[in-house]
Image (cartoon, rainbow, N blue to C red):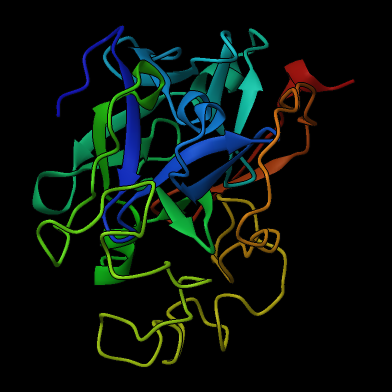
Length: 268
């Protein structure tokens, strides 16, 4: 489904059918649609011309107008636009073609970094060309849930036609795995993390905090907070507004030279 400016859309996961990204306490998570009106609002975004580049897109919250999806230290948040150049860039994305006609969402100011889910938390991560990355970073846009539209099923059709629809038992044969790694992986290993990690650590969830997205070596994927227990109520909390900027960042260019940048306009 194409994204046109002004359209209100929701985005569900390629490899977690029935799961949408939504904001929750100012953070962006992949949650299973629960039918609640709050979920419909939290998972609906107005597609607007990119704040940093009008040929790109930004995602404005339906229930928090003036708040946009943006990345910060590689994680995705819903923050209020603060008028800064950094915010405009962090909140601007290119829509690219993903798996099977789905959509990949590429960062405007970090080319080659795409929105993906990992442990249910959304972040931007550098494309690594593995099947898991492609699946985790492919999204299907549909009419915004806030309109009362029925939820979409996701990338794969339900295994049994005529199965109960959402609201009863899942058409996918039961509850989703408690974590992305709790069930056998579709990629042939007992878990996508059973093999040596491509990131140089024994596991991408080895416990180290994520380096900033511009670090010379992406040592570990961010694990994020533990996913809350199934059934925990989502409750509306005003998204985080202030967020610290201004730390010096080291950018590695394709030729390996170091450039030091300081966000002077954020120095306190």
